[in-house]
Image 1: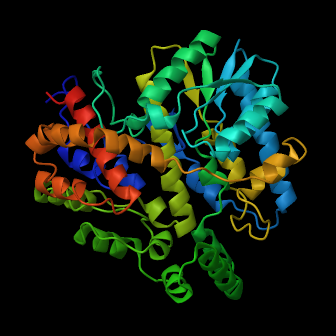
Image 2: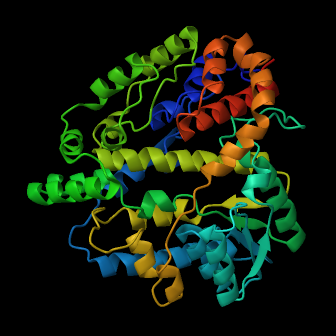
Length: 464
C-alpha cells in the first residue's frame, strides 16, 4: 500500500474504542506508517537541511517557580490571555465565541467583547428550565451588552447515536465531537452570516485552571509530606471519598508500566473513583464489549509503543496535564479539518502556546482560595461582575446525551448489528446488546456507545 492509498490501522481503531487511551499511543495514526508529533512541538530545519522537532511542553512543566505569589500568577495569566485574544482578533472584521455560562467561555467572551472588533457570542443550553449556565450566560450578555445568539438546546440537537445523513470523505481521525455535529453546523452557519471568520472555544481551561487531585502530590515532591496528607484528606472529604483508601492510592508506589499492564489484563474493570483519580491512567479501560481479537490488537499495540523517555520522567500531575491538553488539541484540529471549507476557523485561546507557557510555570497546588479555577477567576476580579462569583456552578449535560440515547436506542442497536465494527470483528455484538438492554449503570455506558457510533461513522467514510 503506497502513501497515496494508505491502509487503515485496525489496531489503532481498536484502541480508539477504548476509554481514555494514553496520549503517547494516541499519536499512532489511524493510517498505517504515520506517526503524529507530540503536543507543543516546533518543527524546523537544521543547518544541515534535516528536519528536526523540539517540544517546549516538557520544559514548561519543569519551570515551575514556587516563589511566585498567587497574585503574580493571576496578573500574568490575565496579561497573556488578553494578548492572545488581541492577536486572534487582529485583522478580523468580526469575531465570535461560545458563551456557555461557565467560567472558561465567559472569560473569553467578556475579554473579546472589549476588543475593538464586532463580536457575537453563541449559547446553547438544555431544556432544563433551572439550568444555571443559561441564566448566567444571559445575565453576562446583558451586563456587557454582548450580542448573544441562542441556538437550539443540546437536549434537542445532540445526536450521538445516529449516522448523519451526509457522510464525508477522507479524514485524519474519528470525530470525538460527533454528538455535537448538528450544534456545530448551526453555529458555523450563523457565525458566517454574522461575518465572523474566527470562533473561540473555551476548551483547555479545565486543564490549565481547575485544581486536580494529583496536584496535592506536588507538596510531597517539595518535601512537605504533612501538607500533602492534609491536602489529599481535604480532597477526599470534599468528594466524599473514603480517606484511608484515598491516601493509599495517592501515595501508591506503582509505576506507569505496572499500572498499564494491570489495566490491559483486566478488561471491563471498574476502578473506584478515588483510586482512579490518583492513578497514572485515569479511566483508561478496555471495555467488556471489545472483541477478543480487538483486545489482543490493543495489547499488542500498547506493548509495541513504549512511553517516550521524556514522558516516562513526568510525575502524575504533569503526566495528566500533558495527556489532557493533547486530547483537546486533537479535538480542535478535527473541528478545523471538518469545517475547513466554511471560512470559519475554530480557535482555543487556552491552548495557544503563550497561554500554556504562562499557566504551567507556577506550582499547581492552589488550595484555600474558596473557588473553582482560582487563578483565572482572581485574574478577572474587577472585570467580571460580583454576581458571577456568587454562582459558580456547572450544569450537567450528560442528561442531554441520555435523552438522545433513549430516543435513538432502537436505531442504534440496528446500526451496530449491521455495522462495519461488527463485520470487522471489533466489537462483541452480543455483549453490546446485553448492556443496552440492561439498566444503565453510569454515563460511561453512554460515552461507550457514543464512541462506537463516531468510530462507525469514520469507518464508513474511510474504509474501502
